[in-house]
Length: 312
Image (cartoon, rainbow, N blue to C red; front, top):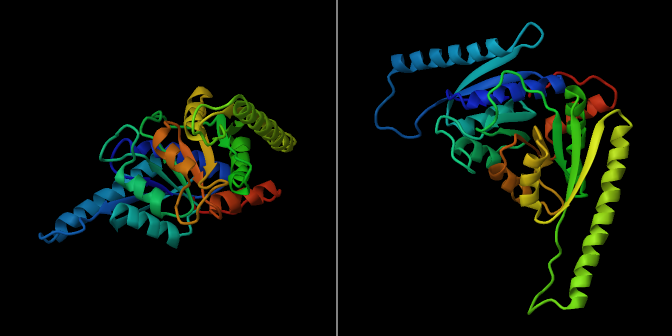
C-alpha cells in the first residue's frame, strides 16, 4: 500500500510503489486518510464532511487512474481518523506486505528529519516499510539500476536477499553487497603503545579478510542466477559510511534489515536502520523479519513458482 496525503511530495511515492509491486507481482492500493482532529469543541458539519469525503475519493481515484493501465490495476481506499493509526490498522487488517510512504507530506520537507506520520510508522508499524525522501526525483516511472544491500554477516541482515534478488531481476539492476568493517575500540587510559596499535591493525586486517570471503561467497551464489553483483568493503563508522556510500555509489534504493547482528527485540529498528532513516537522501526499504514482501512473494518466486497476488 502507498500512503498519500494531498501534498505533491507524497506523489513521489507512487512510482516507487508501482515498481516494487510489478516486481513482486503484487497488487497495489493507494490509501488516503481523511484526517479527523483528535479533539474538538466544534461538532463537524455533516454536509461539509460529506463534501470532503467525496473530494478525497475523487482525488485518490484520479491518482490511481493516472498511474494504472489495463495490465496493472491500482485499488484505492479512503479511511478516516489519525493518519499513522489508520494506516497501521488497515495494513494489519488487510495483511499488507509493504507500506510505502514519503518522509514528508503536507507539513513540508525538513532536512534530516521525518514528518510526523512517517516517524510514527517507523516506530509502530510491522512489516516492510519503504521510505521515499522528499528530495527524490519527481518522475512518473522509477527504474532501479543499483541496489545497495548492507550485510553484517547475520541471518537477519541476509533475510533481505530474496527480496533484493527479485527486484534486481525484475529491474535488471546491479546488486551492491556492502560490509562496513568497524574500527575496533581499545580501552585507552593514555596514548596507545606500539603493541596496541599492532593489535588494532591486526584485528582490522583479520575482519577485512573474513568479510571479503563472506561477501565473495554470497556474490558467487547470486551470480549463478544471472545477477550482476558487486562487492564493496569499507572501514570506519558503520552508520556514516553507509550513508555516504549510498551517495557515492549512486544507489537508487537501499535495502536493509530493520535489525542486524546486534538487534534488540524491544525496538522497531536497530541503530543502523534508525540512523539511515533520517540521514540518507536515497529511498530506503526496511525489511522486518517475517514481513510478507520479503518472505512470501519473493521466496515463492526464487523457488521457481510464480508468486500469488499479494497486497503490497
